[in-house]
Every structure is written in C-alpha cells, then in structure tokens.
Length: 298
Image (tube, rainbow, N blue to C red; front, side, top):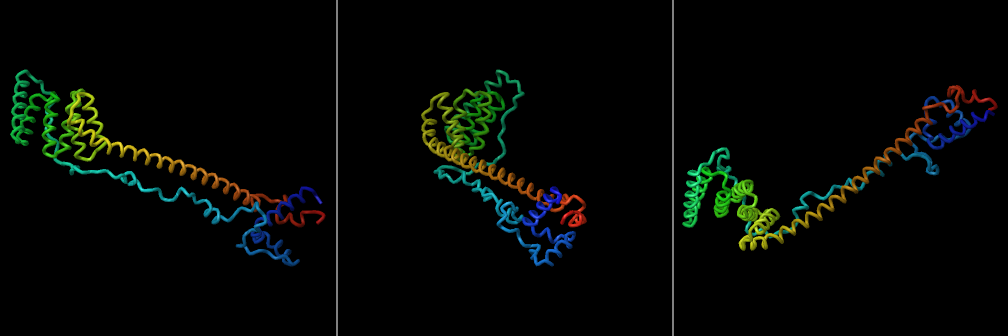
C-alpha cells in the first residue's frame, strides 16, 4: 500500500474517533453503510466524542459555561464611598438664589469713587453692628459697584451672607476676593466657614488652614480643629475605596485577557476540526471517489 495514502487513512480514522458525527455526513453514506454492514455501530449525530480522547474539543456550550469570568459579578455600588459615617451637625441646606452683583471690572475707579466706597463700607459695618443684615448687604454691594477691585469688600459681604445662612453666596464673594488678592486671609476664612455650613469638610479644612497660614486667626483655628478630623476621615475612606476599585479593575482586566485567550484557543481548535472534516480531502484523489477505489492494495 502507498505509504502516503496509508498515512491519510490513519488521519481520517483519527478524525472519526474524535468526531464520530462526521460519519453522518451525506458524502460518507456509502462508507457508513459499509461499516454498518460489517456490524459497526455509528454513534448518533448528537453524541459527544469519547471522553478517552483528550484532544477532542469540548462542545461550545460547555466552553461558554467555563469561560464566564468571575469578574463579571456585579461590582460593589459606587455609593460605597458615601458609607463613611460623619457627624453632620450644623450642616444646612444650600441656598439657591441668583448670583449677587459683583461690580464691573472695566470701570475706571477714581479717587472720588474710592472715597465713596469707603463711606459705604463704614455704613455697612455700622448696619451690621445694629443687626441690620440685609441693609449691610445692600451697602456693601454699593461699595463694590464703586470700587469693584477691592477684595476686602467681597470678604465683608461674605461674612454677612454667612450670618444670613447663605453659604453659596458667601463662597462666590470669597472666590472673587481671592481672585483679586490671593494673599488675603479673610476670604479663605469666610469661605472655609461657608463650606463647613454645607458639610464640605475637606474644602472647609483646606480654606481654614490657608487662612491661618496667611494670618493666624483664633476663630478660624478653632473651626479648623472641628472640621479637620472629619476631613481626614473622608480622605482616608476615599483612599481605601480607590485601592479597592483599582484592585477590582486589575482583576477584571486579567479576567478579560484570560477570556480572550480562551476564545482564541477555541477558535483555533474549531478551525482545525473544520479543516480536518471538510477543508481538504485526506485521500487526495477526490474523496469520496478516491476511497476505497483510489487506494490500490485495499
């Protein structure tokens, strides 16, 4: 017998052992009928390959079941970051009024306007001392219109907004004052107090610490001692949360890489099985015509 055809026959028999269903192919009817005529039993088309052949690729359903990565379990909700318990005593609802007047930067301020602004500031301070908070706001606003580049006017008005329980308005004034003069301690102090009213512990601690750094103030220092432990607790909780999230992301990437690798290997196995089953004729001479008639000596 021709050695090459014998090798082809051995490869075909190996294929039939691995995938008995190939014998159910219409073009192999003559071969199957011959096998049955000599007493052979052909496995049903749905029967799985014998488990004794370790090279047999598992059915697609079993592969899919094996390839579900553990990382696809739902991650812990993002709300985990808010699980930290903080004492929010003294925190109020944010004010939502429209932004206050900030003055016109393009105005050319004269000495006369500066003097008028100082007079309005003095009147506002007197009104504040008398408990006339809204009048103090109005007078500080008039002073700001006259001299919109004087940072202390915004800081003073912010202090009144704090008394009126309007922290967002105070934050706007302080941020404007810091833009004009970032070396002034007063805007940081009042903005720190505003953030404390809103429960923005980290922002509050930052601003109060900056105020004390620029110009030590006992009032700001006392409030800093109150808010700093809460700010540190939140920061530590966030670091732990970020570490956990990074670990989950790394694990998820590993699982995705593993799944992609297994998918690639499965595709290679399936392609090899298809190639052996019908992609090429193992008997060379035009299967099925080449077998058995094309094999001399059989």
